[in-house]
Amino acid sequence: MTGAHMNRWTRRSFLGALGAGALLSGAPMVARGAAKGRVVIVGGGFGGAIAARYVGMADPAIEVTIIERSPQYFTCPFSNKVVAGIMELDALRYDLKAHAARGVRVAYDDVVAIDPAKRSVATAGGKQFAYDRLILAPGVELDYAAVEGATAGVETVMPHAWKAGEQTLLLRKQIEAMKDGGVFIITVPRRPYRCPPGPYERAALAAHYFKRHKPKSKVIILDDDNTMPKQSLFLESWNKLYPGMIDWVTGNNGGKMERVDIKRRMVITTDADFPADVISFVPPQKAGAIAQKTGLTDVSGWCPVDPVTLESTRHKNIHIVGDAAFTDGVPKSAHIAGAMGRTAARAVVALLQGKTPPSPQYVNTCYTLAAPDYGFSIAGIYEPKGGVIAMVPNSVTVSPTGAPEYMRRTEAEFAYGWLRNIAAEAFL
Amino acid sequence: MHHKVAAFAFCVAAGVAQAADIAGLAATCHSCHGIDGASVGPTMPSIAGQNENYLRHVMIEQKHDQRYSSIMGRLLRTYSDEEIALMARHFAAKPWVPAAVDADMRLVNRGRQVAQKTCQRCHGATGERVAEGTPRLAGQWPGYLVIESMKYTDPTFHRNKPSERMAERVGNLAVEDVQAVAHFLGTRK
Image (cartoon, rainbow over all chains, first blue to last red; front, side, top):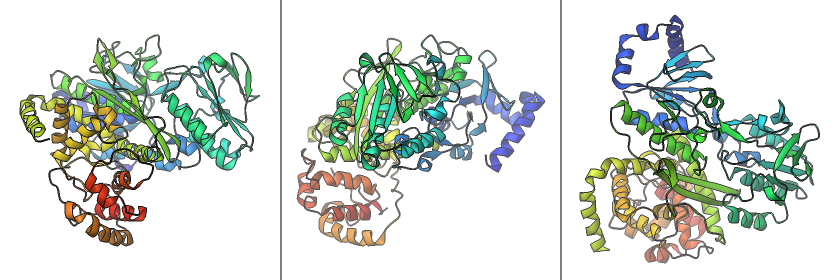
């Protein structure tokens, strides 16, 4: 936190501590809040940060607050390159300073409770934030409780590396310390989960590392499912780049994980025990804990939303963006999180201005790297239809198989251009 | 092509009421091409302030798979030509923001020489010229200019060459010359 933010928040927490913020925080603030509205955004990842950006662009008079746990953010996109030792984690580091410089109130704090009736958010730091509209972007909770044997500390032995940062570095360290001829396992949890092609990309980029440094090693994918996204593209790339190195064990063939054994460093599936030297255990996922606690989730573990405004169908005035939203077939990608951030921003601004929210389109773009110079992609368009967010017919497409080297290489280059632009949209 | 342009002009006039929707539609481009189309990603082209005719023409070619693109053509196929025309108009009206690239004088000098021989006649001395179907190159991202040029020089690229004139002029350039000229043009303002 910089000095400037500290001052702002010291002032606010002082007022908050008096318990009379509305009375004392100065007439201008109340007047402005009353006139234009207060938007509180919980979670400063792609969805939350992009939402903040677009609320500010649409109506600078709206008071925007972002509450985010961590003062620095590492993008999940491209973190598999860090795992494979071909990119440094620092290249993926972003923060919310640019938002603060534009006048967004940024609080580094942990949200512990949301009161939908009082429209108020409480933090671990003891502050209260009143809102007219809340945009909730809590990301995913890793559901270790759903897997037998996944006791406390499992991620220090079997890194998920599904939230970029320390975990990414830990997995990289383990892979770098692995012996030649070792076995690396990645588990694919039941759907839906964050970043559908991510596990398979991780397998490929780990294989890229092994091919260069430990060529006798094996990669095993233990998959809950029987198909994978971009399947023909992945299979083609593995055959071409890493023949014989990657085993994909589908759910029907014994890939379904039943429990993990931390001591013996082993994944036990419905059919067999899979011991390994390094295990990236990616557990099943659900909406971030605060969404569950607030009663915003349904039996699926995700948050049902209105497809036009992303407002929760459980609680009024709370809009859910990013991975936490229940969106059926819409992939949980950074690109979709950004599209939701823009959608929620437009809806919130319209509603605060007494206008009808426009009907959105959610465009997805997702690049995958099978090697640093070998990329391919999926793209698709989704829009509200029949009360859900539905795929626009014929809009979901993948790169062609059998494509020449030029296309694979340039898609890898476009992937990096994409990362820089979406990260700038969110954080710069 | 000419009657097509006239048809667009008509549709654009009729589409004024949709302006707000087009802004929402156009925002779906930002995550790849930058806010308002001003890219900060070294391989993604800026589309803000680009030649409207060129943008529309290229997108329609991409949509119909007459011009190779990685994702653009696939995304565009569910949009009408009218929507594409409105998006082209939307981004063309935004200010051009030159790429933020530090000039390497050795590359700039080599690139300037290549540009004089190869590009100047159509694109102007610094790639600043905009004509009917000619895009602005001055200040475009060099990484993107290389990717686009490699469609004419990379032996593994077997698809239709987007422009015959470009194929004639760029087709025989060495990779180093492509990189130098892209750097020269990309570091112009």
